[in-house]
Image (tube, rainbow, N blue to C red):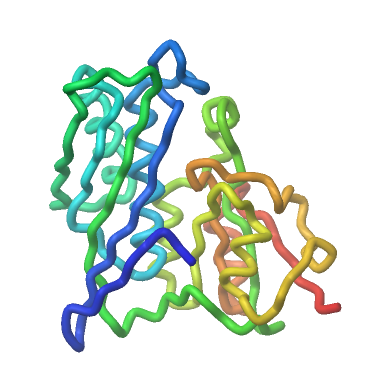
Length: 242
């Protein structure tokens, strides 16, 4: 189950609502991870945007629930704009609310992205595994301070959008806190994959924090093109049956 709801509007289109939240990350003294609020706004918005687009949604509105304090609002909004700019998406409105009656000891931020998808979009959330499919991880799973320290290993949003729109890509799955193996079993639910079946250089049970990486499933014939486009972000995943 993904952090999204898809609600049919009519025969042609559906509404997509995606959500993400962060807690204990920010600039307050009791925060677990210390980062500027612009970074927090960027990554929270990034995750919800990726979830929306991974099912074929076109983002229309970003809603931010700010528990970091009124003084953080402009920085949070700036981070959200940065994510949209990286995706080269125009016309997305940003709104939200700040808890200003009480000051929390730790920072918290919720992000909701509302989008619209055409019902005939081919991107899938579940597939039957086949040897005709190629699977790769784009980017590396990073969490906490690693997200800042190894920023160059975070999958670019521009590459994410490119693969979402690629004709030979069957599924694009953002990886979250439960890791690559969990997400592989979400996209291939009938395969019942275990650790021994997955051959890759990446730690597949590690949290990917704010979706610093994503799984791409594609027609095997397209591997050279996708590998060339992804460059050093491309990490092969081979699945063997037991």
